[in-house]
Amino acid sequence: METQEKKRVIIESLEKDMKEVHSSRECQDLKVKYLGKKGLVTELTANMKDLSNEERKEVGQISNEVKNEVTEKITQLENHWKEEELNQKLEKERLDLSLPSKKFKRGSLHPFQRIIDDVEDFFVSMGYDVIDGPELETDENCFQRLNVPIGHPARDTQDTFYIDAEYLLRTQTSSTQARVMQANTEKTPIRMICPGKVYRRDDDATHSHQFGQVEGLVIDQNISLADLKGTLELFAKKMLGEDTKVRFRPSFFPFTEPSVEVDVTCFKCGGKGCPLCKQTGWIEVLGAGVVHPNVLRMGGYDPEVWTGFAFGTGLDRFAMFRYEIPDIRYLYTNDIRFLEQFDRKDEENEIK
Ligand code: PHE
Image 1 (cartoon, rainbow, N blue to C red):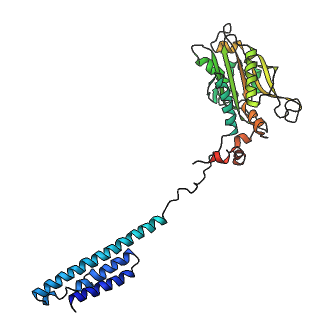
Image 2 (cartoon, rainbow, N blue to C red; image 1 turned 180 degrees about the vertical axis):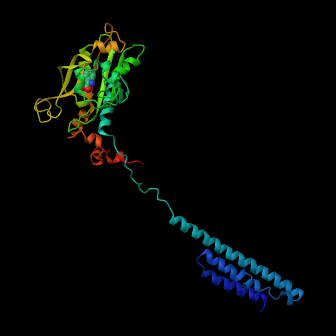
Image 3 (cartoon, rainbow, N blue to C red; image 1 turned 90 degrees about the horizontal axis):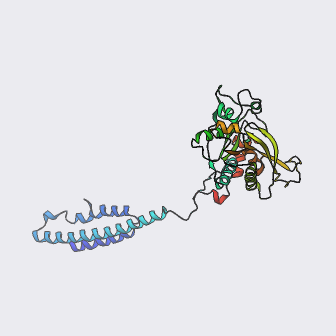
């Protein structure tokens, strides 16, 4: 067969084969079939050595042309399929950025913490400092410097967890009063609150061996019981609602004189009488009074110059009232079924 004729046959055959190709892999097979060592194009030059110079030149030239044409055709086809395959792959692996993300739960603020936050907000807005005191305290700060010497009967009302003769778990945040007065070496006015945990040997539905208190202490000149009353009235309204009224009843605390117990109108019945307030219309929320001269003196403040008031309130009671929690122990056992009630609403809960 004439070499030109052979060329035509090869190209025709290639074009036919190319129609059957559906991947870049199959293009490789075509390369082998036509351009490989035993390929159809290579075969054109198989018997070159038997040819005359002239024939050899012609065959060489034609087979070069075939080789170039075949190579170009297969390469083009291969590129076509490679691109096609890449597009398919991209399509398959495409990320849909509009799909909604997984929702993670953020948990919620503990009801106890919510109360602390509100208390702090109120007193900070009134110019108070927020002080943190240690739960492991000395007998001196928790009792002696608060006018409760060793052997004083008032100690019996606060069943204390003693660590040893000197150290105890604080039974009241009032211990911070003693600390703050001592620490204020310049003896300048004091306006502070101290929220925190305290411990007593109690355990029933309304008492826990651990509970929360917030202490308040103001020391300045010309501070009176009227300042205390005004402050606590505002505080009660902020915590329990604008209609809340406050009343003082005489009481006794060793570290204040006079001492008062502070009641607020029942926020459930508004003062009419209900089971929550035991039909009295009032609920006791606070102990307070004018700082005892002995306490001022032990704190380094001259009682002839300085006066002050102090108050202490149970944080748990506020949480129990506000969120209608029937048993104080719910606040401390971290039962997830209880805590979930305080979860944020769905839209607040999502982390995006
Ligand atoms: N510490 C007292 C208590 O735990 C409360 C209190 C504080 C009373 C400050 C008067 C002044 O009961």
